[in-house]
Image (cartoon, rainbow, N blue to C red; front, side, top):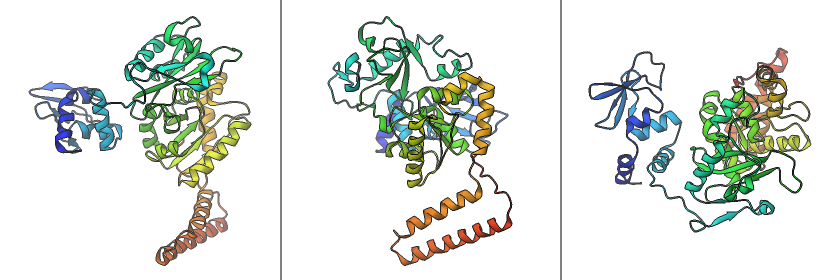
Length: 395
């Protein structure tokens, strides 16, 4: 991307004061705007926004830059991601489509209900306005409602016509990509209906690819970076329950098994993942496979089992918010891997990768690291003291 293109994007994007004003309360002082800097603990306004130059400066911590740099810093975005976000806001990003405007894409999984969704940003946004307007009472739990509002969850009434007919009597979850762009919907059946699938989703398109999406990542990614790990759950409602309980670093699979696309997303934000899938046979099997796959790709992953037949959403509703939070904190502390367990895992990984190292110098270095680890592990066992738990900062 050339400097000319970047300048054009900045010129056509919202003014820097508008963007920063979404995160910081700005007050005018002369020709400049002042606010508390979001990049350090600021008690006196030290962030200055120059409207004329479209530039910000913090005279306390030294952070400064243009609107792109601000977005990179505040949202944890790469340069490319920040530029894309601005291009979407100013309408210069053209979303490619495999079909012509106005042509509907049909999800073959849901042919019995003739479920379809227009493959255009306008239609998706219109659907969001419709379903989210029907939110009241959708959560069924006052402690959950604020989180459901954050995630824009809504319901579709039993009697609905036109393009929303397939969503009839369903709980509708808007799905956004990691940058917050609305790409599709997932819908859960509210009542038993013979021949009707429990879940239906938007069809695969340029916008919506289940194997490249993690539900809630746009909201969770900041917390994942701050806490140093992610929690992976199974369903949309599980994410809402976890966020309502204060575990804002939780994301979910969008109705599919964990795959390379999901792992690539997770690796952008963390190298530690806690897998907490449903406590049934299918969930336990999926959890074992997910942990194995994550570890194979260099992520420290561990599984946590919930009470038989339960999931985060069901436990939240069964126990209430406070008991659910207490249980999770205790469970996560119990399942935090010990120093010895982590060291054993690293030694096993080192042995597995050793055979693939052909360069003799690298091979000798790897062997020395293994010997050091084994010696430390032996000393740890001989000291016969309780292994210290790793600081995963679960709670």
